[in-house]
Length: 223
Ligand SMILES: [Zn+2]
Image (cartoon, rainbow, N blue to C red; front, side, top):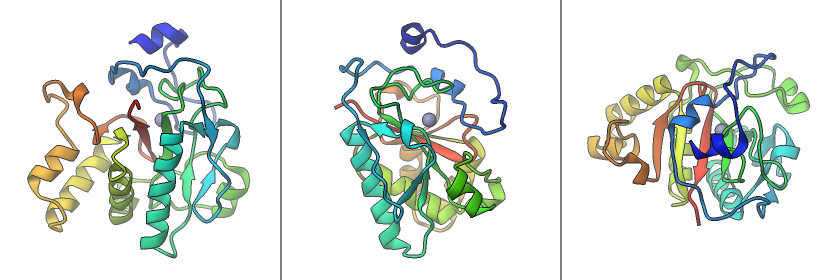
């Protein structure tokens, strides 16, 4: 809860425009802070239309570790799926970090919101106006591409955790087992139960969080 104390964040409610980017549940992920303090040494996620679309370039600043992690994952997706849409990237942090309401964990350039595969809607509207993440119903989620994105992020070795909607997690776990892409042990390591003792010491994991139906929240480890 140290972040709440540090930045005086209050209770969160639904956003007025209906764009779901709230992360009140992040407060439940009670992690020790990294060493660095404000102002943070951040760089802007570059313009790279072949790889991603930044919903808001002004809040697309992250640590070098976060930027290179996103680049690595996006490059792998583009290589594996040459016809794939560019990633939708939401908020990282402001240029020097600090509070970025309504988020709780986007203050230090270590977190990024990334859209899921399977969204439908007006691409022109998304790419021209950047109106937030389009919704992705459970049946719409592109399991293979979303899993490959998660795998690409985890394989960088930089990930502390990824937050995702519980229903999406359940569907991904079932799909991974049914298709034989992962063993039960591997699935349990990547998606550990929230009752796992000392879970806060684990990294490279995917955890459930409400309000993450259309994007996943990526957080890189302290360096
Ligand atoms: Zn987030």
